[in-house]
Image (cartoon, rainbow, N blue to C red; front, top):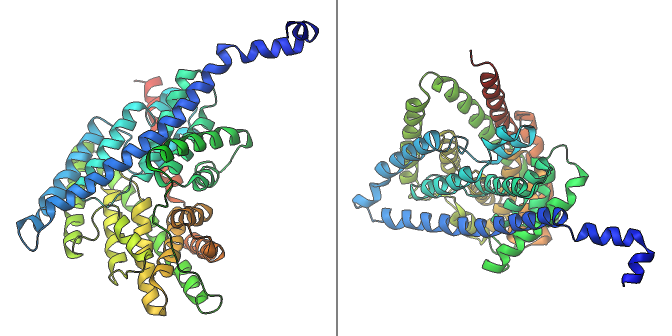
Length: 447
């Protein structure tokens, strides 16, 4: 072997390079970061489920005083979460996906640190879990994206890696993959939503991060489909009016959600400018009280992520006819309240409720209608049709409805673009970019 190395100096140089710490340290740190995203995503999911279950235990009651406890617990919890987010974890408010998108557009590491850090990741997890314990209509999937991006950016700092934008993308994709056990959706999400100008050189980073995070998740929870396995299949002729209705109506409602969220958020931000903390707490309290009232009016169905209701609809149990409107309102209020929490799972629940109602109108299977409603509505909210149908496909394990889900998602996206041509996450990300620019200018010109 030594003789071969002497005769071939290029081989000797290659062995030296691969044996050097400078080559292996970044790789090992990156792999450890990806695995940690999978492990923390699973822990986050468990904590979120426990928080929801505890809320239902605490507020359970047949007309007794505990049934009305959300009227105190929910607004108080909203105010406390908003105060913690404003005072100790600024940058943790809302979904977390806009922060990750904004961080990719920022070039300075200090500016990125205001949006992605281990401290923010810990705060995001704690406050999202707290919000779910208080009955907020939020999800953990968007926050998992910010957590994953934060972990991967920290790994880049420790490992001395220079590809910050690619690593944020990889961490975000790994977060989606681990949160839902949907590796393909994680990759599609990275391409379509996180990186509108996707760079092919990040392929390896995204794939490796998704694989390692997925392996960590599988090691703890095993292979599973988020909503179980959907059994219903679209009939070629009879069910296509339902496909079109779910796509168009779902996309319209999704665009309305996006439009309302953006307009209300902007108005609140302008109103909060004079007294940011106190007015933010007042908004959070009012939104929390309204969420509690809607929750009591719906018999408790609108509290939490909506996972149970969506899964029930997919399995064939019709939801109340106006559940989707109640969940829609609770979702808007929770989002504009300023507390940390995502919109993925609540949006899927709204879509399932809308589909269930349309299924009753068209005389179609509830499970099938719920799937199509989810695709149309979710594509309308995030204006990312590929992510919408891939994520629903992977979460339900039924590949017989690929074309129908694609159609519903594309129709939802097209309808949403006619109503609102501003994608929700990217519009919100510009707020964080603008804040970073103002902060930098203030630091450069303190006078």
